[in-house]
Length: 202
Image 1 (cartoon, rainbow, N blue to C red):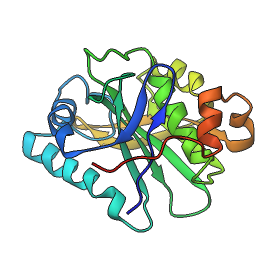
Image 2 (image 1 turned 180 degrees about the vertical axis):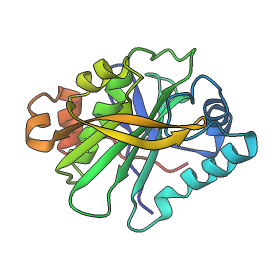
Image 3 (image 1 turned 90 degrees about the vertical axis):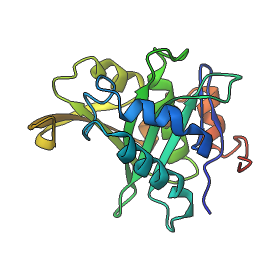
Image 4 (image 1 turned 60 degrees about the horizontal axis):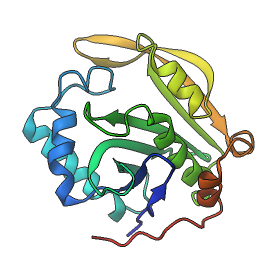
C-alpha cells in the first residue's frame, strides 16, 4: 500500500481520500458548473460512485500512478475539493489533474497552493523531474492559476479531449525540478526534503 502523507500549506492541506468523502466527491463530479472545464463529462450519481471507488483503490496499485487527494481547510478534516497527480509510464514526468473546489469552500482563491503542495511531493519524495498541467484554451482564468503554481506556458494541444459534444484545445504549462525548487516556500521545502507529516491510514 502506497499512501501519500498529509501535505500542509499555509491556507489548505491535502490528504488521501477516505470512504467518508463520497458525498463531496459526488457533489463535485455531478455538478453541471464544476465539471464544465474538466477533461471528462459530468457524471450521474452511479458514475461518480464508481469513480470514487477507483480513487479509493489507488494506494493499493503497484506501482502507483494515480494520486487523487482531498483538499481540506486548515484545522478542518472535511473534503472541500480535489487535486490529482498522474505519474506517466515513461521518464520522470507527471501531470497535475482535476483541481476543483466546491463553491462554498473556505479555501477558494488558494487553488494554486494545492498544486504547489502536490508538486513539492512530486519533485521531492517521488523524484520527478518534470510536472506539467493544462487547461481548456477557453478557460482563460486558469492562466494565472498556472503561473502562481510555478508552471510556465508551453504549447496548445489541438482538440485534446472531447466533452459536452465537442473537441477542445488545451493550453499546457510545465515546470522542472531545479527551476521550481528555487521558488519553494518553507512549507514546500519541508515536503521536498521528506520532512512532512506521516499519514495515519483511516
